[in-house]
Amino acid sequence: MIEITNVSLSYGTRTVLHDISLTLSERRIAIIGANGSGKSSFARLLNGLVLPSTGDVQVAGLNTRNHGKDVRQKVGFVFQNPDNQIVFPVVEEDLAFGMKNLGFSKDKIAAKTTEILTRYDMQDLREHPAHLLSGGQKQLLAISGVLVMDPAIVVLDEPTTLLDLRNKRRIAAALDALDQTIILATHDLDLISDYDRVLVFEEGRVVIDDIPATAIPAYERLMA
Image (tube, rainbow, N blue to C red; front, side, top):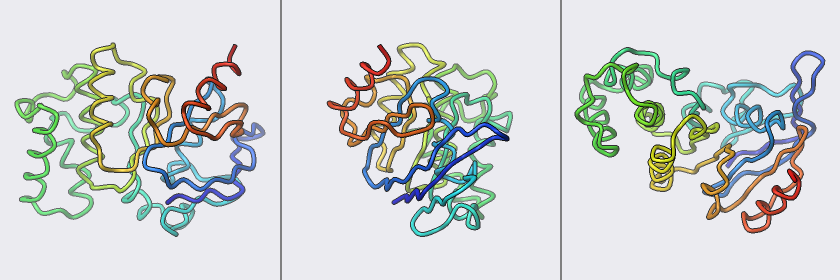
């Protein structure tokens, strides 16, 4: 469970989030809003990538201000552009990076690498140059690099924005199959029709907090 208490966020003199208090406990939560509404900044607060200017974010009782490393083990983050997340030139090396930092044994790293590549039908790409992957494969690698570290929660910031329809569907299927709690910031409203909860951001505030059947039409009216 993630507790957000009286959180505001400013960059210099510009305030991008205003006094937000929420409890996030549902298994599938979507974050939607226009560009510049604050949804991406909010997503980055959830695992301590960004710290609030005021207020607190707590994950399972751990405050992101002073337990950032522990929080990031519980909450994985997938960026919109996988090139910002892939750091090693070969697929298996990139997958091993986070696991090595967590002290996983060589055998465990090898086993988990095989498991995740098999899950996404990418086992033949184990020694493939990461920069030569397709857009969809790169995003799956970025997601895989988070999943191999066994987080309880995965936050994704617009993971399908740069993809064609086929790869959007592939990523959507991958997310649907995850056992972890998913918090998804997205513009793709069709991805979230069966989610448990939708948060709509507008000018740095949560203006709608409801189930998809109510929140999505209200958001579409807001954008009209």
